[in-house]
Image (cartoon, rainbow, N blue to C red; front, side, top):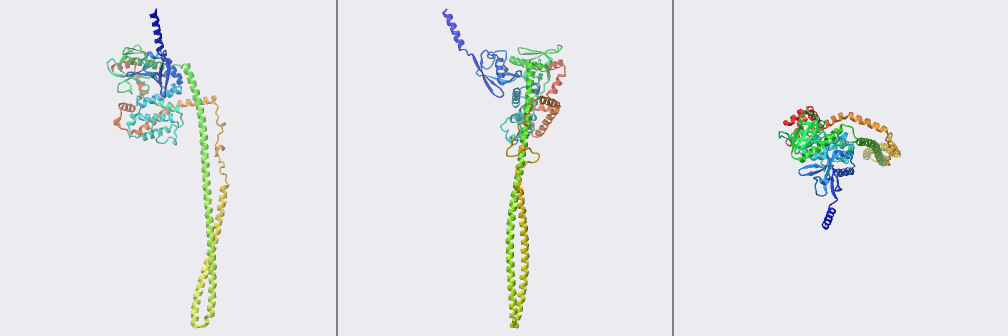
Length: 592
């Protein structure tokens, strides 16, 4: 009895010492979060907590991934967290990532947070070269990534060097060309400037729309062997299963869409695929480890479910989410239009203010020039008056000298009778005196004329002064802030104001109908946009082609270039492969 009681007490003590909770660190693409979880929690309990914290409702795309030895695994929803092969060191680190990818991001991704997480994950995989991206597409994607971060391009804010610290291009692309960081920034900025008017959410979606056409987008690769023992790669994505050669992850040798597959199973390392056509033999392959088979099966089941779900009716939850998303987009569209109109009015007011300031400066310049002209006129008038006075004085002096010469001539004539010799001398002197008097008379007349001209110049100078004063009076009498024709009164400086009554918008049914019409129009213009995108990519490729270092091309670069020359891309290659019968594709796989 005593021993049983002691054993029970020891068991209770052991239970008290056992921890009732554990800590988990969840790493998302934007931030890290830590949670305290109960020991009994299953994977779904933790996953739901993370989704609620993020405000994420499109949970079917995501999962919690952890590293295990030389591969990765996804947390199972139905099993307890601690019963799985998660790291045992606390806090347990799990990565919240997209496990399944949409076929069409624009149609399937509803919430902004879903789009944001996909954008960040795809961007990271491209930069880390897990997804092969050609150089011209890398530049265009980088421009959308810059727009998603900085908004509209503004040359006053986004000056050369503002992308110096940003990681925007895969290192493979940078090393492939003889281009400096400044040259890459110039190319990216040129594309970035063309995206003006888009919101950041729209820039992220444009990024995903381009990225989803890349050959390795959304594909999970696994090493396998067929019956003949040939090493191959199995690719699992949203469309189906694809078989690749080990050195070519871009172009599959054969493909099996999900709607052609009836059953998938594995036994130990052997994987079995049963086609929907019962006349077609099953095909099998071997993987390297049992753990890899489990991962392949998880991805196959999830992608198959989503594939069939996309081709059926949306659930009530998805319909509600899409309706809310449409309403939110409509509200944002109306708000964006209101802000654009406010911005346009503000820009108009600023332009009007600048025009008035320019006119004010022009009038001030004219006033200053008129003042200077008046000052010069006054100085000229004073100078001419002084010259006229001097000329008058000189004329008086010459007249006085002429009178003295005349008096001297009379005196000489009186004294001429004194003698013949003296007469002769006196006649000579008289002649000289007469000539002198004549010269003085001519000089006096010239001086008088000059004085008259100076008087006329003085009168003209005073007339100019009068006109300059009159012009200055006209300029200064104008109203500096006279309202210019065609400009709103609210645009007059110094105080600029906007009437909120004129800028209000009601969210009515007409807005929804108009927005629906715009959406339909966008669908009609989709092909034109795709053509424009291809032209833009070709233009970028042409611009940088001359700087390429051919010897640095990777095998995947060479394969991509060959595919591009042949006109082969992800979509048409998949259609081409699936045109063949399932039976012939299975036979081809087994003969590889």
